[in-house]
Length: 143
Image 1 (cartoon, rainbow, N blue to C red):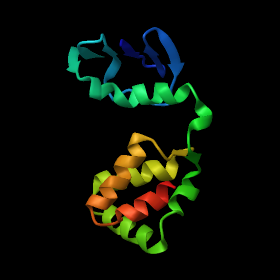
Image 2 (cartoon, rainbow, N blue to C red):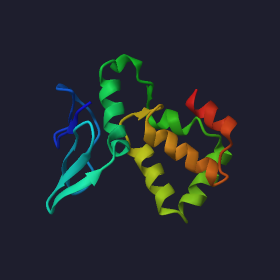
Image 3 (cartoon, rainbow, N blue to C red):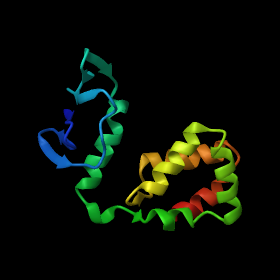
Image 4 (tube, helix red, strand yellow):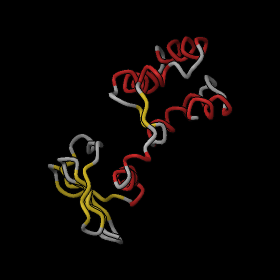
């Protein structure tokens, strides 16, 4: 499988192009996987990449084939899936954690929240790791 990610939001997998709403990391012009090795194009040259590094774009490319299958909700609807006590505890914890504060800001200011997106899952897992959410509540938030 060959993968290319372009700066204009196009992902090509084995020559089939699909637009995705996922930006490249800062400083990266493009990323590629040739079936065996991967690399990112940067201003300073090429840097090696694993296939796992391209997984978010591959997942977005797959989802773009059937956008009706995406589970999208409004940010407010997403945040209201947490209890008032959970939201209060998360805000307090975010004051001491720049990473958590960043995730919350991304959720608040997003146009939509994709419930099955890697970033959504990772954020909820971070809340569990911080003791702010249980696995059962995570499942309820994602339901």
